[in-house]
Image (cartoon, rainbow, N blue to C red; front, top):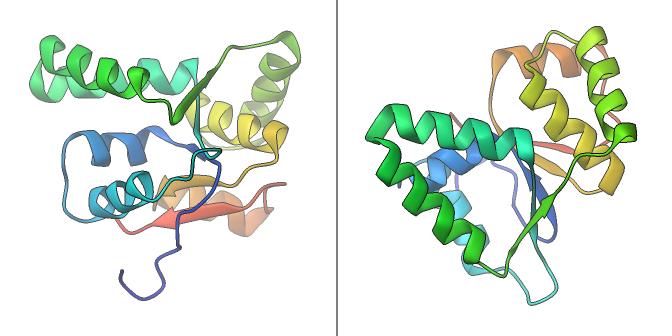
Amino acid sequence: MKRNTPELRGNLVLDTSVLVEYLTGSSGSGEIVREYFAGLGADEKIHLNLYTISEVYYILCRIKGSKFASEKLETLFTSKAVSIHPSSLELALKIGQMKCERALSITDCATLAQAESLKFPVAFVREKELEKEISKKPFDVEVLLLPD
């Protein structure tokens, strides 16, 4: 791994950007995520929310078509390493509050709110908007930024 690249390990919440890099087979961040998946222990999982799943499908569909998007997500869903979390009223309100306070997408807010609720680190591909928000006020969760 490159210097200054966080090590991915254990239970993590993953952002759309990280999953797209992984599912499209990119060499940079995608390779880091492939190594993470390969090293997951039996009791370790990646945690996803419904916003992230919708956004991953949308992006994969735009890049390579709906068949590709469906196949990639089906493979991900059948993995025993993936835990999909439904929304709750409490989480929805937390997402809304974060969106009100931060200049981030609703999906990024959902990913961060989920990570805070689960108390697991969250991984993103480096984004200027996210780095700006972290510098203003850190989140109540460890945010791992992968190279873009």
